[in-house]
Amino acid sequence: MRLTIAFTLAALLALPAVAEINAGHDKPNPNKPFIETTIATFDYPWAIAFLPSGSLLVTEKPGHLWIVSPDGKRKFEVAGVPEVHYEGQGGLLDVAVGPTYARDHSIYLTYSEPGEGGSSLALARAHLIGNAKGFRLDGLKVIWRQLPKGEGGQFGGIVTFSPDGKYLFLSSGERQRFTPAQDPNQALGKILRLTLDGKPAPGNPWAGKTGSTTVTVIDPPKDTEAAKKAKGRTVKLPGPNLTPAETWTTGHRNPYGLAFDPQGRLWEIEMGPKGGDELNLLKPGKNYGWPIVSNGINYDGVPIPRHDTHPEFVPPVVYWNPVIAPTGLAFYEKNLFPQWKGSAFTGGLASQSLVRIKFDGKGGANEAERWDMGHRIRDVAVGPYGALWLIEDEDGGRLLKLTPKGRK
Image (tube, rainbow, N blue to C red):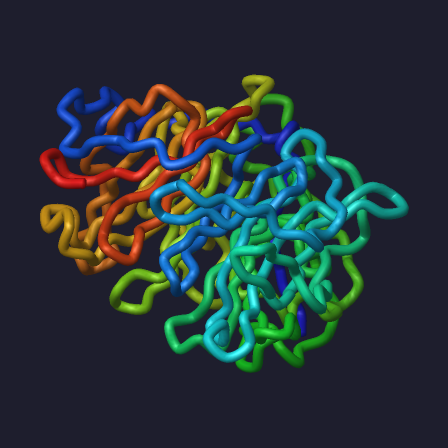
């Protein structure tokens, strides 16, 4: 197999920027249709997940896992959590309740795993054992890890499951290394599709394919006209190894939201650089362009070509300029807030907001509402009875339950 992939180092990109378009409501709606109830507080919480009982699992980035009752009156730390590399964006990350939980009490954790040469994203599965006297993780096993280890942040690490419960999807960030997002031999900057035990899932786009990969590198142009005409030089990389067999989509930056909609379509949300946060509709085998294209610019001010300059890459359905720094993605199909049915929600770190996204049913979407929460919102989840749950990204970060005004 011979793949031709064009990519450039982000610091070398220099094409003119197009007009910036904001996704919608950069001014928050002051009229909140909900009341906020503080349920519990945590030390830099990162993710929340609901157990069948209605209790919540909450991860803390420093390396702790908790079970908290829906009313917050009971809070238990879970023993047996793996060692994490807690630094910068690294630590204990996502937690997900497995599709087979009713049978085997399996849960999944992602975290930055320390080791020789630095750290890497790891995915582990364990059995949640215990009762009101204490809880622990039993039989914890790393079922997938990103190699080689190294330095850098933005691990991604979001877990979701296919609607039929047969497969696991995992987001892997590019760790601010740029080019690995386009390298088929690295898991960085990818969405992976795995079996429930961490193996490459059958039917993945590159499963069973081998051969060389030709990469076109665009050298730094001296001016804008040169950038438009640059054809670049080719570099031959080794043929794909196990990583492509796991890959579902490629060309992602910092993917911090991953969820299926009611129609069974997979959506992903990721942070752009300076501008250009994205909401993407994921389709198997597609390339979403990072770091070749973005609707933002580099932190040093160097422009990046826009998506419309490279039609071979899939453009975002929604993008944000200025950024909201989106984290978490949850679709709403409950009755407690009937006006929200069919919407999705994401939190905002930089924008300190909760954002509602509206869909047209045909693959289009736009930001519908934004509310100022006054704190960095790290994760969003929909509870079993329709309340919306949020956590704040800070020391003493609150677990919040949102219910309609006039309801508890």
